[in-house]
Length: 100
Image 1 (tube, one colour):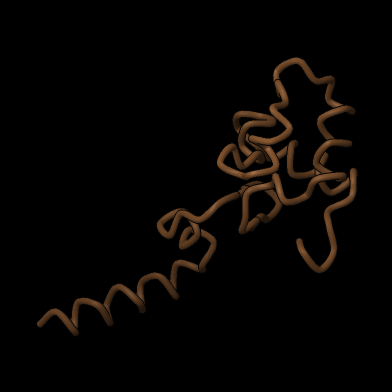
Image 2 (image 1 turned 120 degrees about the horizontal axis):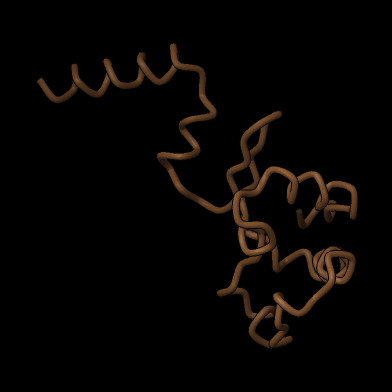
């Protein structure tokens, strides 16, 4: 995102894939979020999208998504779910072999 911030359409797409709406995208530990002291709950959707386009550093990273699933923020187990099953099985077999 530091190379090219997300535009409003991209943020809307990500929001459509979230389970918990705005909170799934916002990094509450971000210095900018704390400094702005914004009440996310009180913002209209258009205001929220404008806020994230103006302050893209408030968006959790990394962002990984496909047609149906979104992973925002680092969670190794959930990120693995984006790998094909064959790759996950191969990695698991490799780990088992190393353990023996």
